[in-house]
Each structure stands twice: as C-alpha cells, then as structure tokens.
Image 1 (cartoon, helix red, strand yellow):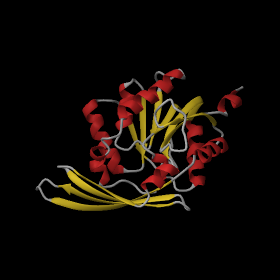
Image 2 (image 1 turned 90 degrees about the horizontal axis):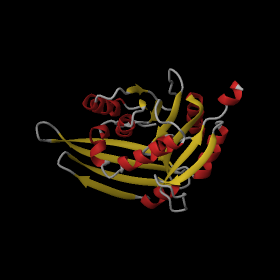
Image 3 (image 1 turned 180 degrees about the vertical axis):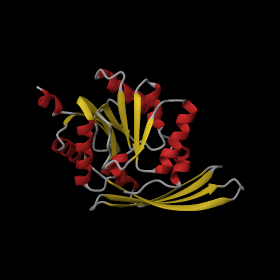
Length: 254
C-alpha cells in the first residue's frame, strides 16, 4: 500500500473541493444519534488531520492513525496551530494497535480503497471490531466501481501559485484496480519549481462486498448512504458511507 510523500505538501491545496464541514456535520450527527457525544474516537487513515481536527473541535478526544509520516507531519503542524490534544500514530491501518478501546472509528476520503486485497480489508475490519467499545460505531466511506469507471483512462491537470499537478488515471475493471500516476511541480523557496512523481493504487469495492466483509469480521451492518447524505446509495453513487456497529464484546460480557 503506497504512502503519500510529496503529495502531502499540497494535499489540502488540491483537495479544497471536499466539503469537510458538511462531512463533519454528518459524522457528528450520526455519533450523537447513537449517544456518542464525547470520548475517544479513532480517525483511521487520518491523512493531514482535516477531519480529525474538526471532530476534536466538537469535543471528542481524537486519535489519528496514518501510514504516511509526511501526512502526519502536516497534521502535527495543524495541531500546533489549534492547540487540540490529538494523539497521532504512525501505523499501517492493516496492523494498527491502540492502548485500549474507543467509542467510534471513522475513516474518510476513500482511505480504505488503498487496501488492495479483500482479505486485508477483512483484517482491518476485524481490528476495528476489536478496538471498539461494546456497541461502538464504525463510520467510513469508500469509492465505488462506478466512480472509477467514470474516470476511466483520463488525464486531469490543475495549476496553482504554490504548484501544479498532472493526474494520469487508469482503471482495470476486471481486476478492479485503479492506478493514478501523479506528477507535481512544487514551488521551492528559491522561486523555482521542483518535479516530483508518485504512483497510487486503489481497489474498487461494491457495497455488497463491503457488507459481506463487515459481517465476516463479526460486525453488524446498520446502514449505507449516498456519500454524506441521508439518501440511500444507488447504481450511480460514486461514494458510499457505511454505518456499522461492534458486536461480540457485549455477548461475551453477559
């Protein structure tokens, strides 16, 4: 599973079309509906900490896990600015470890699509179930096959004062693997631009695959949403949000 390197420096710049505020309202709404108004929350695949910071601002005690030291460096800088007490851990989400259980786990921005093998995603789900409090919630999103099919083989470019990028995308519908080659030109202090190149790979999952893996992991599937809305997903949904619940611990305690 690849990690963000030079991309971390401009991730927030080029992801400014994401409605983090709206997503945060959706997540906190679902947490509060379940009676989770405070306590420990894990942001799995937290990246630069955009969602982690927003949930911390809502009063939650946040832990952020990510496999990229560069992304976490950006997150730590935000933490210094806000003063939020967030614990960031440099860990592969397929093998993450916590000191105890948490009330909920969230994972946004298709972080789980970076898990290329269903059996490895099952492993992640089992870890989540293990580290959730009894009846704890798991809220996460993933990009669908429809999204990758629509992007297909295409080139996307964007240019800003701080830098520019070229995104060459390739999708293999048989293997369900989406590969994108990124070329960045980032402005240095000297005023010159330095070129960086990275390759990222993601796997497309269907809602049924996700539901089956959750159940195999021992979790209870609760609901699916079309992106961060109250609408159910459809055949044209490009991002699906899943709400699942821990089960197993309460039975053992009875």
